[in-house]
Image (cartoon, rainbow, N blue to C red):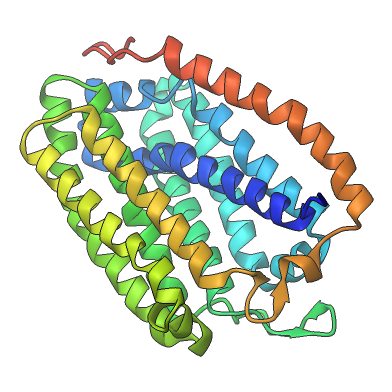
Length: 333
């Protein structure tokens, strides 16, 4: 039996991207919501809830980006020039967020400045990530084996919609994480934010999904025509059920369940993305097989991933297990 290496690598990269989105997503979401928390204990507790894990979460971004470069070099060579401004903005946002995270503790005299940098960097990074997704989904102009569009092709109403939707989704992840990890007044505040973020995320997910149907004819066919409809239909149904469970859990005062439902919404969103663009890796015309590296290169890299990915999963799981408790009013686990 011959392994379909491009398909395996497409799954591995999709898995890495999903892990990054859900793990660094709630970090970025907390940053987006950071200005709404009271200066002092509330902000300290919110930041300390992610302090043990935030930098390790970005391992998945490196794995996803590096995997794309190594396993699908043609896709990497097309997508990056098409989204350079967004990628630069995302990286700068992540840098500002990381620096602010460290320096707000070491430089109390300028803590207000570092709080602004933390919130601003998180917002810029989240918005840029959503717009990169939108730029990919709307299609990238390719001529031969190179990007053939302009510097501003990524800036459209659709990419702005996906960018705002990503910010809302990250805010939902961040607020439900804080509902799970905090106590007292800070938890109550996070719950109120989670309800608003939930409604906004659900609305924007629906808007993006409807927009996708009219964005490209092949997308409409995959979602509305038989027999593809039979495979696609469970995704919005499961998403709707998760949305109801999320709102119900928040209304009932649940703690862990809303965060789990938020993760589920992102998982169904990722599944919907796969249904929309598969087998393309660069819509509308570049498939995963067109963009794949030589088979021997993918085989060699697969050995490395088989060793490193279990290690990453193990130390990630260990970190979350060790710091599984709540953060108290003084900001300690």
